[in-house]
Image 1 (cartoon, rainbow, N blue to C red):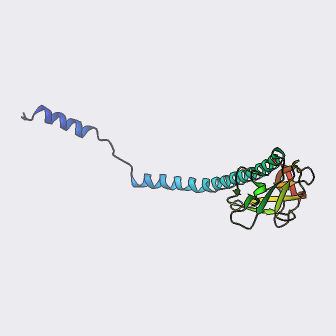
Image 2: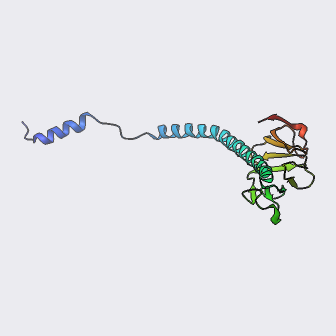
Image 3: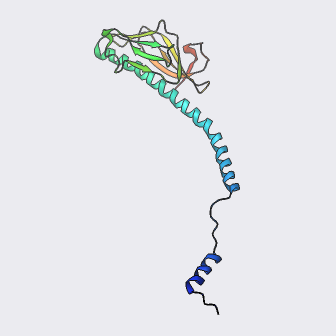
Length: 185
């Protein structure tokens, strides 16, 4: 008979009979890492394209809403409103004309259109709305993403009553024409 203590015997029984593996092997970790890397590389371009398209749509919406706001404010204030387009700046900018008489035409002084290129074929760089909301400008604006190639939207403004419509632009700038502004958004 051995004269071991019952506690030591119990401890030996517990420790030797049930061993639980601790952790992962290097092969398992490498397999999981490679799989996650492959999935991430497949998803990343799609997410970047989605982000570029959403940014383009947001900029189109802000540009059109700003022009419509200037038109509404011209009617509401009973005075001419004039906004200027700067397509050469980086980013392109839509701003209220600097003269004091155009103050209040927009709730902001300048709208920067980030991550896009802006093309236009208006005569000059200004758009004027009379106190009736009419416009003497006839032209097309094309907004193109810097990051998603072949994604372009357009805004066409009629002269006379100043109506605006937007759509998908189906030609490559520098060709700018209302004829290529096709499907309504």
